[in-house]
Length: 313
Image (cartoon, rainbow, N blue to C red; front, top):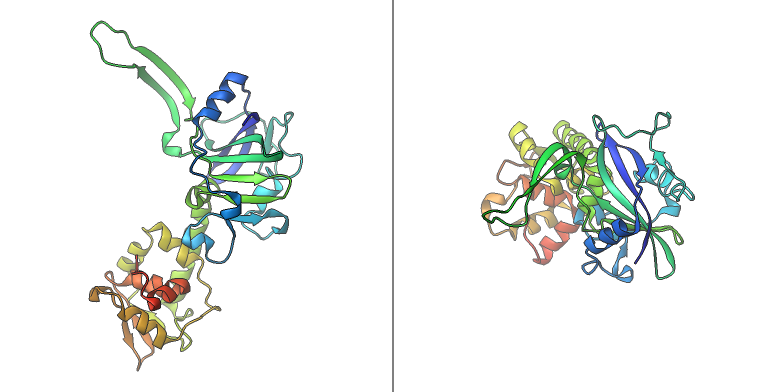
């Protein structure tokens, strides 16, 4: 595999900001290639098309970007980096912002968020995306470089204004010829695009709707009680729970209360059982059983609970 071009995508104020063309030589690109772990990637034929549960279950998926419209959460990516001709050897910088500004990278306000490698795979034009963990971003630091401790050895001191680690794992791949985007690491991809912030906002809104009684559980429309501040905080500390709350659709209720009761009864730990009040048509939750509530509103988990395959996580 040979890379022809490399770009670094940045974020600003928790939003995608720009992508800068990175000047590289043959040796640099060779080092980048050697750093990538290609063995653990699933074959394209083994990856299923995205569905309503893909983001919740965190399984690899592909999406046909040709069908992504303006209201889709991936439209900004499609309309900038993935747009035909947007990234090429002559592209110095592309921006996610409508307002144009200077092309210089701002070490004060911008943070590297991902890298993009342009390559050819099986005679197909490919863009590889690698998420950059912001915690590993180095800014104005001095390092002591040594290979081993030894009496008489002299280590090297290296000063860096800003630096990022060369990625080792591929987060996603875009096939420019087919228009398909293959997402290998769902959580890293969401972080890369700052979708986790979007999910947190949507999860917060879902919680408010359950608290106000506007969202229901089951065909019989049971309301939720016990969702106080302490339970809310517990729900918001789990990434998977946040995604499930964010993706909840009150208009799509697939199970009745009887089925939900059967599913809950199979959980071995009684403290995790939610409390059903049939007279008042409500379900009571607390800090011990709130994850069961999340399992209930995630319909596929209810199905698996009924079959006895899994317990609530």
